[in-house]
Image 1 (tube, chains in turn blue, yellow):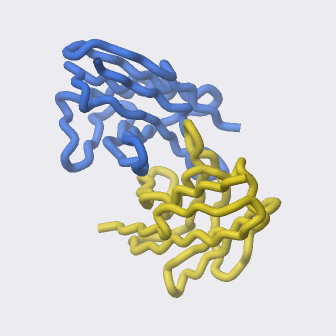
Image 2 (tube, chains in turn purple, yellow; image 1 turned 135 degrees about the vertical axis):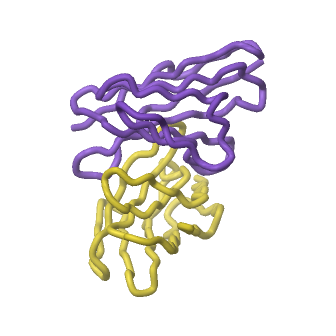
Amino acid sequence: GAVVSQHPSWVICKSGTSVKIECRSLDFQATTMFWYRQFPKQSLMLMATSNEGSKATYEQGVEKDKFLINHASLTLSTLTVTSAHPEDSSFYICSAPGTNYGYTFGSGTRLTVV
Amino acid sequence: EDKVVQSPLSLVVHEGDTVTLNCSYEVTNFRSLLWYKQEKKAPTFLFMLTSSGIEKKSGRLSSILDKKELFSILNITATQTGDSAVYLCAPYLGSNYKLTFGKGTLLTVNP
């Protein structure tokens, strides 16, 4: 079935540095990738939608200059958290429209900014 | 604006109990209702409900959709500690539409 590989699964970085998270669709082409953020004990909140070959669409309140999204090819979408701060510590997860069951999720990235 | 409301937000039960989780929605272009289970990492798919009144079952889990009243329920019978998780619902509007999740129900099953 459709698989989305997300890396890294966890990362610790220093405040002020940037972190890149990758999501690859392994056996299908993902023209669209949804990026979610989840804080502890909260639900998944959509941050942005990336589309191959065009600019990402950001949800209200999400800073596009801070969360850079690139959809370089039909199998790769990346999220870069720039100048990360402790409040950016969260669980980030990508999701692509799949086949039979609506959506395929990556395994998530737990980001801790110290 | 799309709206998804889940209740209860949290629930603590003992092994063997039966639980009912609720999901109501108000969206345009509704096609189906998705249920997911989330433990430590990514949500895992449980059910996709498209037709009203037809129960879907998977082991001890079952779910049904009411498209007239705009809600769905997820039942878990004979709960086990492994059922402890956050259960999420989201309306499915089509393959390239975003999923808007409810806040989820945190289920804790104690031995």
